Length: 271
Picture 1 (cartoon, one colour):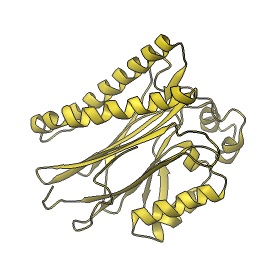
Picture 2 (picture 1 turned 180 degrees about the vertical axis):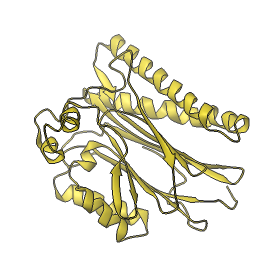
Picture 3 (picture 1 turned 90 degrees about the vertical axis):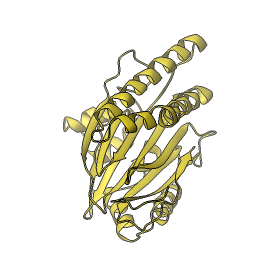
Picture 4 (picture 1 turned 45 degrees about the vertical axis):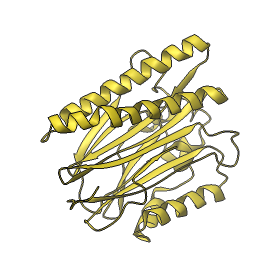
């Protein structure tokens, strides 16, 4: 779409099998649009779990449902709510609960345990909104500082929160893959939500554990500082993950808010 925007969202994304796993159970979603001079976007990482086909199904269905929400429900919500995103976020929350019930029912029908993480970032009018469950993550990078915006719904995440182990210990813990919350396993899911303002120059990374587990926070910050090109930043970090074994599926989306004039690497992407 043409127009002058207060902020320009520049984006790069990848979802890869890695060196060890036989298939990719991760899926990502990147969608960008504009309404009355304001750019908006939805960015999602879903990391599936279960059998080889079950986990892939759960994450794929999650992305399909959210893509359909973008195409069918969001346009109407934007027209009806010019000044507020409250109903948009409520609609997204309702959709996530619908996805949870659908995957739960499919698992019962097929007699397979299946589930997926969900880390969703919605940007609109210089504000960010987060809906999250599981152990994928959303980071914010601004002024050479990195902050994890999401909470890890995992056994080791709870131990870190209690101060019983460190973040470094969690990466090597034998129960690091044990989730306490995810989509498709429980009738009721406890979603993590957050929101805030987004300044120009703010960067976000939405990523699966196969990506962040092989990186240090300072490496992510350095990659951002060394390049204004989000595609190059993502390639640098992905290359480092492969150099360290890439023993899991790896998915990541980098989003930066820059002054008008920058162009998006991708205007939409679904993997």
